[in-house]
Image (cartoon, rainbow, N blue to C red; front, side):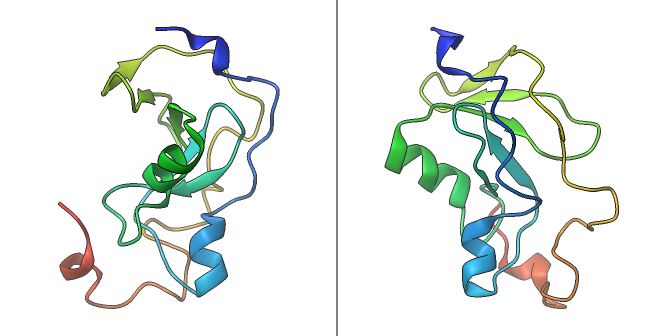
Amino acid sequence: MSLSEIDPTVPPSGEGCADCDDVGGWWVHLRRCAVCGDVRCCDTSPAQHATAHFRATGHRYVRSFEPGEEWFWDYVGEDYVDGPRLSPPESRPDTQPSPGPEGRVPADWRELIHR
């Protein structure tokens, strides 16, 4: 396994999942591609955009984009890995709820997620 693909200098693409934003969707948690910085939604989220990003690009490493979480995931190895500190911000804003974004999460969201 080579962590050389990780670019610790690239900033995150935004504060939420751009793919969900494009269609008025919502997410449970956010993941940041450690290769290109794209922020996408997790596999629990209805659209699973982070995994779709991996499949489309081959970018195998993501980092949690949740406050207080610093773990990395390797899609190819299907395991957690240790990675470098990434450029800030390291998570979504504390003011943004999870699930989010505020105002777009349906009341029955728990029935709509992947488990």
